Length: 252
Length: 252
Image 1: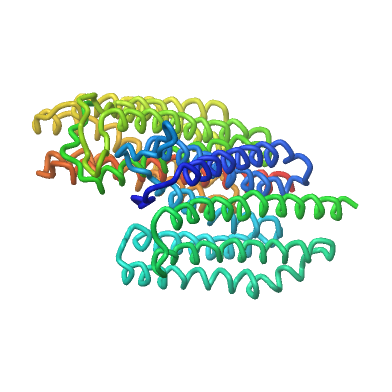
Image 2: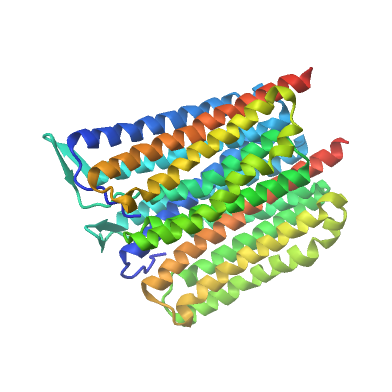
């Protein structure tokens, strides 16, 4: 995606710049935490916690690249922001989502510790729907034509709604099989994921509902970063807490 | 190999660029996963899982180098792609294959947990054939003469066919000694490897059957990357799953 950033003010430049650095730091720290604390959970939850760290690891890599790309595309010198002519490549976001969004759903399924067949079936369905959602969103994201954007947005919303439906209703019986102490937490994790994810299709429509220029693009960059932190690091922390509580219950 | 990339469009440049970054991220994440999850399998499968991670580790390193080399050889500025004059070195691919292709076959043999003699014999034969295949392919790859390319291609196909024959028939009796629960999975791993590998000699012939210019080279770069992801990360996941299931069976 060739991001149309517009003419940034020095303040906007600094806000985006520091947001990217902040997000990288959070993702890297979250990765270290999840991987270092893996032995706090029972063996059969370790894969879920490892994947939780994998998601933030992949996100840390991509935020580092986004940050580098931003610094190559814009400079702030003598108080003025200048475009260097090099492209700000935030296709990195889509590449990141293509990998991490399916993994996020898989870590949620894994921490439930269902039967092998159910784990494989649910993981496959949700992961494929997630990948499809990202792939369908991309052609719209790189288009500047509102009609084209709406078309791909609508198509991507089909798997999106399938996933949301699944998180709220399809997993209901599986959640009810969970120990009482974590049932509430797992429901919260589902709700958190859905709320964080709702942000993405809304941000996507910003250029289609009249917002433009550097205000919109600053909002998009900062907004996507916050949504990523919630959906990956905060959500991961919930998964880790669930795995720990379940480990404590099962050890008794 | 001095890759003849041709005049890339901005879209082709971005596609290759993002494919390299994506492949690096997958290989690095897969490495972390395999090495962190080694303790999910019994002791005698740990070497197989370690080598699985070694393969993606070596690939991650080479994709990082390929990515850097690509960025040194081409720039995208003000919407136009320019060749800097610095060479795009993807001999990195052959160096990578020389190391990883023998290791891929060794991880497959190791996860079968045959007798020591059989393990050594089969690993040596297959690894040597794999190394020979890569070495014979290289003189053809760096040649622009169709006759020379066909000559080395044909020579490299001899060890290639030997390996394919071995995966389909030579390992049959060893596969039949495996626990019932994984026999099917091991056969799938063999089939996946053969399908992924068939891609390489086909891509090799593209310049010999009339395809040229930036369309062909974009196809080659993206195609090799996808084949590498399937043959290394996806195949590795199958090896890890086989090792886990066998561990579960043997622990009972």
